[in-house]
Image 1 (cartoon, rainbow, N blue to C red):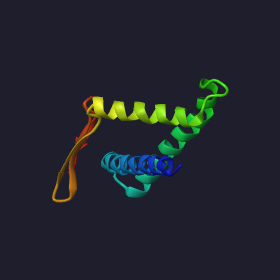
Image 2 (tube, rainbow, N blue to C red):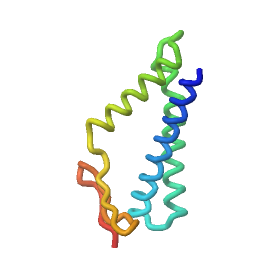
Image 3 (spheres, one colour):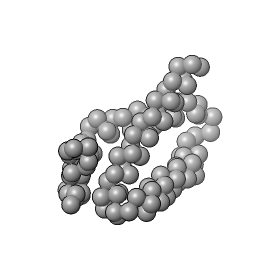
Image 4 (cartoon, helix red, strand yellow):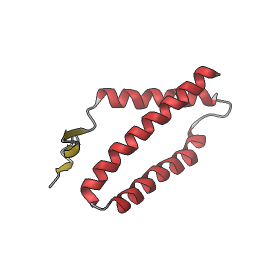
Length: 109
């Protein structure tokens, strides 16, 4: 049980890191930090709501929920390892350029 708690803690830390990175990316596009936080929270909470609504419909009855979470975390990790999702350049403690492999992004002013 202790190992499971450590895994959940590590997953939460990774999610917070992603949220911080996306906050800086959204802030480059939107500009104001309060609007960036609102957009980020809407996207994050909306994704959680859609996932909690859709996942029970996609998993068979009687499936071990820990195995489902493990499979989802595994796929998330594989996706991050296989693709360079974010390309961020930081200079003097500030994000200078941000984008991804699809050419979406911008340079800071």
